[in-house]
Length: 299
Image (cartoon, rainbow, N blue to C red; front, side, top):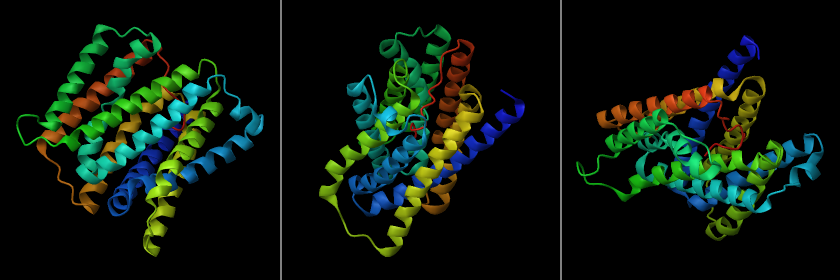
């Protein structure tokens, strides 16, 4: 891998974080105005169309993309991610972008913690220490026992857990299925599930909000396409740490557009969580633990 490709991969990953932060802002607005199930359903329709188009263009076409050796696990992955997206959007509307993303950035710690029971990997004492420190950061953000604790504050933590489990299952199915197969089943199974639920909550939307919905779908498609390109030109372990920049961009949008407050405990806790997450990624790279490269893993 050349230095130029690594630099390009980093630039693409930064662009991805900007686009996905915008996607989160649009999701917060639309999810706060209309039923969340309907919003996520429409988003999944476009995501599934993108997945099918990408799969059809790939080697072997749709026939190869459909041919999974683990249909049960693949479908469960798709359902898990769809449910995680719903929970994340609800968290955006209840807590705001700043607090939600600050807690959600703990997901690499959960990946490390769950890699043992899910994949049978060994987690050393250094990473366990980082995991413990990271969750001290989560407690600093949530402040249980200091302020009136809101049950909604558990949503981003639940979302992070589901996202981490989804990522680990992606590594699990990669032992037998190609990435294109996992990508196809993620989009299609999620779209089917969300249609079965969301169609019952259909609400009429204004012309402006239809435009914002179209923009939301475009950010999802363009963000995933750039993410695919980033993983094509650079090693995942080199560019994955830059995904944490989404927290910064989402914080900026949350404060400027929605008036989210940035409290000192949130800043301190987020710094602790991100630092611990970066350490676990570094240790995984040292130990040659694969980094998940499924391009569908963005909530």
